[in-house]
Length: 331
Image (cartoon, rainbow, N blue to C red; front, top):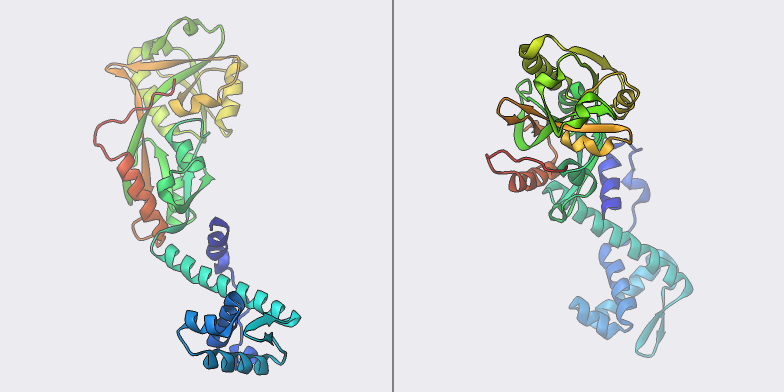
């Protein structure tokens, strides 16, 4: 079903128009249906019973069809009807055509009412582990034939991608106040400091902002830089001065490699820890009131016309509908 539905959704690519007058035929749908029923049941009487008509009517329609096609389609053997060699070809091809047409109509209806289709979901950073990975790579069975399609962006491009209708839904870590569309809080993720092995802070089970004074921090363009930068400024500055922050136009895994090489530390969210490699240590960052959290929200534009999005949003609201803070615990 997914393969067929994907074909439907890609069918907005312009194709040459078809002139029905040039392929018009006197063959009626009921002629083909009668032939398929006769092939299925093997006799005029049984085909007539299945179609709720008289055997003579079935016989007449088969003869009319054979006249219109120009070849004999069935051999009459007493009370049985057996397809000829050309009849088998006709029945096979017309049967496929009818099945494809029925599947197409049913699929279009399912797409229209949100029971099937694709939802393009934009996100940034490594998937790591947790509910975002589950949503994108291991969708809930409740979605049925609605398929999430992941598309990775830099963090600052997600809202533009929504406006351009490149994506249907954005999963955003951090503040969503700049977004003028709809949003729904999903979960919160803890903040961790990542450092090379042997670092002076590696002996701690967790770190406080005061412990990080004097350190150089590396930021990735694919991470929620503004939220991390705000943490560094709002939390470290009162502890003893402005932090040294260097932002690189690289992915977070590359930042991890730079940290391992001794170029500085970095902050990351809990779900990204699965992307860390050997030679690194990570410690939870504690603020004045305990662990620091960054919210993850689903953002979308209400005017977007993708019925499948509604089904996905209903699932997200059921799974993440509580107003209380939903905290990941992956480590």
